[in-house]
Amino acid sequence: MQSARRLSLLDLPSLNMDADIAASMNRIVESSGLSRAEAVDRLNEAARRYGVRLCGGNAESLTLATLEKWLNPNEAKNVPSTRALNLFCHVFGSSEPLDVLARSHGMGWRIIDGEDAKLLEWARMEHEIKRLRARKRKIETEL
Image (cartoon, rainbow, N blue to C red; front, side, top):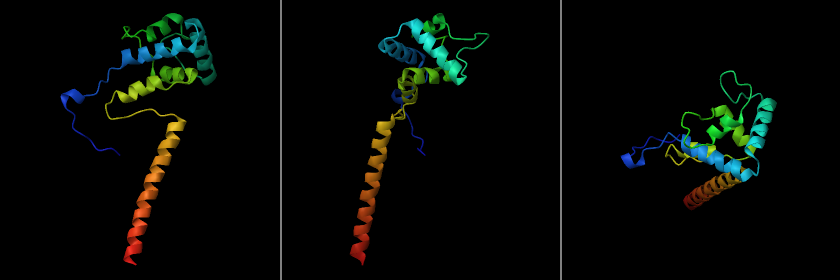
């Protein structure tokens, strides 16, 4: 568990990430090669498949107008729910919006993919091996 640290006023986290998440989502949709309508169709299809409710109120499915608001950094009142954000990341195969959210805390948090997770596990294992070798050498000198 990470210990608490004191932040200066310059280090305070920015926890209102709505505009940054919207910009990230917008970049992802634009780079997907899908039209906005196709993106809505994919999100609605995945929502039905996984039983995820994308919108509040009486809305049965996501509309193009709502997606446009989600992707607009200037629409601070219209942000996707965590369920919708999670589904969005799944549909488009990108954790970037979640990474934006994690980094906003200013504690060095990041979202990593499988390859980076393996690399991190390897690095920790290497570190442990070096520590154990050093301990072994110390014990050998004492014998």
